[in-house]
Length: 330
Image 1: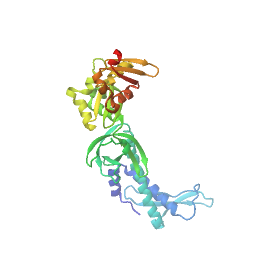
Image 2: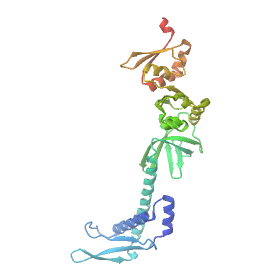
Image 3: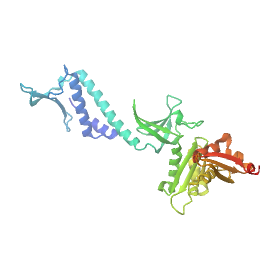
Image 4: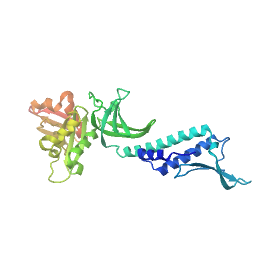
């Protein structure tokens, strides 16, 4: 019995598994097939046969132990390949295939496990399930974008290029499985890190994010180094940086606000684009803050269906009571 070494070289190039590792897998697989096909249940305590593949010729040799009267190994003899039954040969192929698949799966899992919590570019593929979007990440992986991670109302067309956030990498029933998201708030964080060098270097920090995917996102930023305008760095010259992130998100609106340790001041910034006349604490224990806005900007501060106020509350962690300036006159 011979192994075609040229096939092993091809597998080595395609799956990035060394020839020595492949041969060790094959030797073990053939041995397992031989033991399985042997009559009777083998005694694990007894001397075992071994299989050796010649690294130069590919010749496979089965060595059976020679025992003395007491069952001790005194040597070994070469068994002919005719002793391998049809069942053993089939089992060997199955074990070899599974071993190679497991090795390949481990390589893919390792490559993508390290990228969990990061973003990656991919191409939308056609899938059998219309609710599940498939995203090709590379030659060796197709990720799943499940319905709950898709932006409501967004279309994912075949061949469309987009960036996704890797939420989970695990071993599935059919091999490695990567789950990605287009709604995760950290997708926005990572996109800004790509567009804003000051964020990538740590000179500017995104402290908090509140997002309603497909509609609006608010991010709070602060500078960690003196002399840097955190908000200006994120907006970019003529708004170029924030527009690049918006384009990737399907023109989702993005409000960039200044973070403050003073909660009322933070709330006043978070209610952007509305202008806040004054903000003060109502109850420090419950983080209740009242924000006063000009009467004509009340609807802007609250936002359509309360979205602006809702996102501001989520961003700051405060309970926000928005009132018009005229309430003070009353």
